[in-house]
Length: 85
Image 1 (cartoon, rainbow, N blue to C red):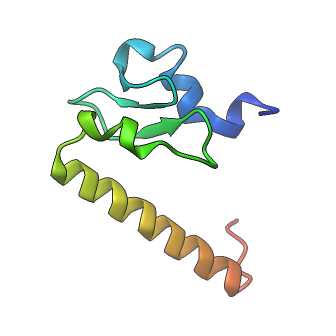
Image 2 (cartoon, rainbow, N blue to C red):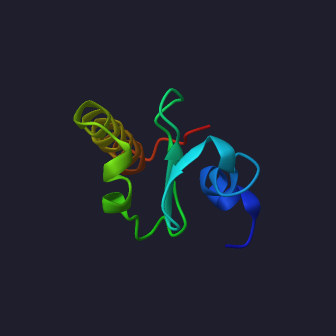
């Protein structure tokens, strides 16, 4: 990682906002009651199993759907050569 902003959620959850996080050494989420935002130490190899005890079924479904939707939109924009700015 070359810059703090390269993995901003992980750096927040494992640093200044650690007291608001739940999870493992390589995967964290904001604690229950906060937004279900997650961060991984290695985003290229996310450890979702480490987060399973910290999410109920509904939250896991919402998280999976959100990630899938983001990937869909991102790939569509790339394929159509649409600049995000």
